[in-house]
Length: 300
Image (cartoon, rainbow, N blue to C red; front, top):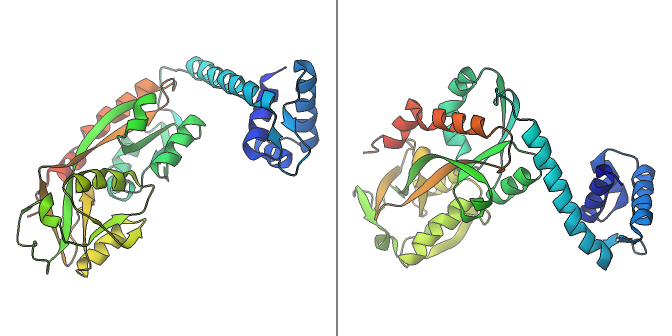
């Protein structure tokens, strides 16, 4: 028995297909099938039901897979701890970032970030929160930039900044002359939201529901920019994070009272080998003057 055999079992259970599992593990299908068969003989159990087109785990296989996942997870932790170095931010770093942050944060920081950490090669991937958490678990990401959500309790997180929510309205909207708006004043407005899967939508809906504000089903998109284009046409109003509040023709931004915010964090696995590097980068980013200026800039 070796760790590779356990990885093969995990892959087959995931793909429910020997060839797809072999491709994912970068081995030939006969090699993968042969090793799994040897493992079954060694354990004295049949792990997979091969009698149907879609390969499925047997009842005993289901029980053993739970322990296999524990073994592989603990092995990964051991490797990560052993890899800890005194220069934690060297080499390629793959960072997940949610779509409601990426277009507004990266232009502010990316150039100076590369200059400050010259031994690092940053690669950013836009993903929704659920996909980011799965990628962190699988080791596909080093860490991520996202809004704080309850699911992050099982990860190591570093606070970066707090960001106000504002309401975007058309210049022609009756609320446009106000500097602030109470949530209850949005009752009766066509409130535009992002589609399901965006944590920004989940957070905005929480305080909408508490104020009795209904969300419009007219349009649900994947881009804040599309929502703001509709707002400019006076086709509804929407919530916007402060960094996204750049000057746009036909759009006014109003502060909300009571004030609503989201907390933006770095997140990584708790046993990520370069935690000190994540802390270091987080301190640098949260203190960056360009970011502070954007977060405190008056929109009036």
